[in-house]
Amino acid sequence: MMFGEGRVSRKVHYFATCMVALGAYISTFWILASNSWMQTPAGYAFENGRIIPEDWWEVIFNPSQPFRFVHMSLAALIATAFVVAGVAAWHLYRNHQDAVARRMFSMALWMLTFVVPLQIVAGDVHGLNTLEHQPAKVAAMEAYWKNEPEREGMPMVVLAWPDPHLEKNLFSLEIPG
Image (cartoon, rainbow, N blue to C red):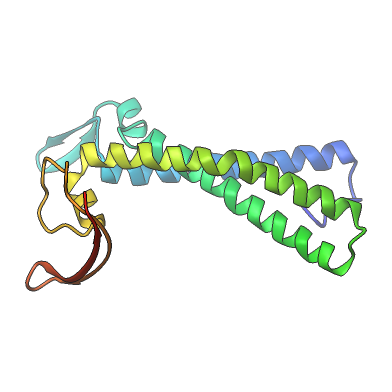
């Protein structure tokens, strides 16, 4: 979009930029729908050893897809805000009076102020969804070797040195539960 500025009207340039962003967002949706289906498959049947889609709505909007999509969308906004803040900070470092850089920096920080807390909540909700559908995966992420149905009172493993042959942690730093 950088090289189109000045070659077309501002409205056409803005429209083209929005269309590129929309296209990237749509691609994100389909990539995450595919990946989510591999994690929490739904809407299919086995026939003669083959997987046959029965309900495309369930295939696309499987149990983990909305959580993954929100989580990744917020992550993209956070990454973008940090890039904008970094570029603005660099400009401000070189020229303290740059009004455009000050506005960029302010907008990026305001974006981060609102989006980071949303990402924390979205990540937690996504983790709870994963716990519901893939408890063994969550146990592995938390450095537990057995999938305990009742996690109340279990310590939180902050750091661990696992031994896959013995199926235990050789060392772990834990916070009592």
